[in-house]
Picture 1 (cartoon, rainbow, N blue to C red):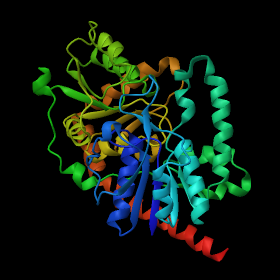
Picture 2 (picture 1 turned 120 degrees about the vertical axis):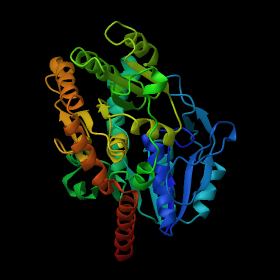
Picture 3 (picture 1 turned 180 degrees about the horizontal axis):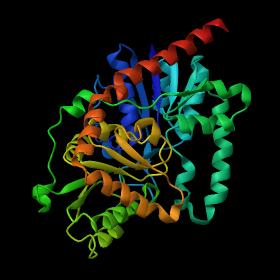
Picture 4 (picture 1 turned 90 degrees about the vertical axis):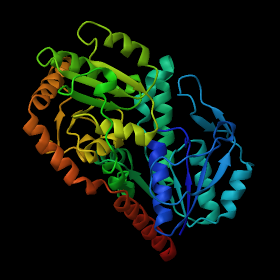
Length: 402
């Protein structure tokens, strides 16, 4: 098949979305499909370097782009809405059999137009819980949420299939669609290269941080921003360390919350117990996570939480606040613990208690580690790409019968 992927954000900016698109594009190419990615041009024409996804690099059609507003991270490029863009002509000349949108906005509108022109089914993966980012809009958050919801419902209605990376999100989308359209929603999480992750040599954070070899390290990987709730994990580690002085926190990532988090880490109950690496190339970040003993996850705005699968594949028991997609990855009590988000006022203490119970029990950690690594093939990128390709084939067959 000839598959056109369209996206609002792309490499070299690193996020769960851009990694997902890259792994799908390369995975489809490895299965013999021809792939073209329609994406915003990187700043200064920067090269798109590999980020660890297996398979051949796809072709690209670059849309003129601009740096997103101040609230967006550096390097996050957005496409200009230009119906006459040369990249759109390149996409039309590609004659796609399937058009797969990864954002509903500028590139999504282009995807809908290109699908109609090609007579191809339009597929959409819902990567982002847009309502979780309303705090960046200030007083416009409420009207912005209503407008986004109306737009999304209209966009979904024009799709032959909607992919949700988690069962929770799929249920939410089905509940907002007309009953006759609910069967268009399919749960297909993003896959990971399990073999490559498990082959990484772990990077021990203890020597560089001046920690003891016996210290137990909780790892965290992700953007340091309000929607990810990194301060919650830090507070839980501080409380757990009251009863386990050798507990440590490794934070990998950057973002607008970093200055406040560093100030919090300098207080008496955490001083010397937290190290920040900043952003790191993806495979290095995963090697650093593999050097920890546990993985902490507190984000409530995910559609899947790809880092959970990556951490589990590395053999880290995952301690996560319950939220969208968490239970699709963690098997509670088997390879991690899921902590209820309610009641909110007791969450820091309950999360701390769970961290302490697992961190202080080496035998329990080892059993969870073995189950996490041993069963990691359930996250296989080859399996997930195969499910997407199978969906494409069914949609094509339906189209031909019409």
